[in-house]
Image 1: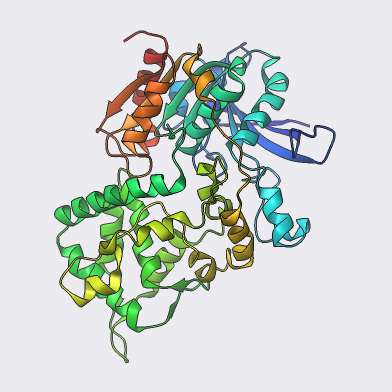
Image 2: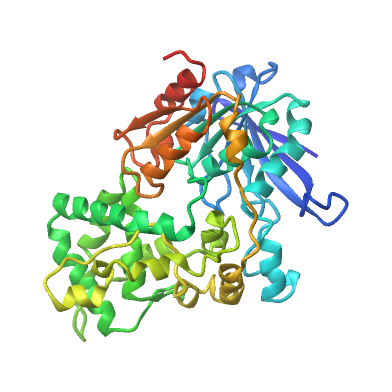
Length: 433
């Protein structure tokens, strides 16, 4: 039963759908999907086209907006919006350390999670679209991993799309995870260098914290084992528009004096715990690398292996000399499953996924080359999360896709730029610019 309620300027409706766990077996086991319908209060009774929003991640539920912030206000001028919790996230049959043991042991859990990639998400969307739109195609806005899903949508079911809009989420059509991370580490180095150029005082602050972690066993309040590698992983913040500033403020008051000598403050540890823990979004860690898997090659903890090719990220070597500590970016490592209490029970499951060799293709280059759906994509210059070269190569491979390449925003431009980003993409898709 759908339930509607109001927030300032909008009417919200909770919607739930039942879909097959495996779309190749429509009569088999089912899971539940949750989505929130949003419509402007003054348009609640109107027959409007639909816009489906696919969140970034993988492993994140849709934004829980209050009112009509960011891009949502612009979208509500002409659309009803459906904010989908992709399978396994948010209120959609969650997959985490508490629920996955219901499937059985690690092998059964890994088999289950092979059905949580973009191809299954697209088929979920097609399964619920007739119930939402009455069968009419809808516009899809895909942010980051949501953009990956949108490209898979164009490959698998373009008939369901009226328009496709992508922000920071054009994937390589054929790169292995190793290729993705070989391209990523140099970008991260540039972001770290830019951070230290902006905040040179952070060079010594980061080195001091790293040295403390190399010589002390630190466990954060929630039980997270805070190692120097975990500290380096806070560099993921540098991919957002405000990330460098947020990292600077985090580092500036890390220590307090204590009877036994300087200690990492409770306030610093509490903030770090919130930034590092995967408790709210465990799927992000567990299936992150398999979103790139499309053939018989295992991902085999790609980010960890490729990191060894970039010795500047070795914290001990940096501290032994006079090099600045290098932070890392959007990478998942096996040690995270030892450090994070939310991931420890899933370590073997994640390892089995990393070793898997039976992945199927996510994209259809021939179908994309014949695309007839209007598509527009925002490509952020030197995006830390998605390689610009890979994105532009894919843009050239999708017939009719129009790009807006900009350095005005970072990867979170659809949040920071809001209405302006969506306006630009709609104008491109409609051939108005």
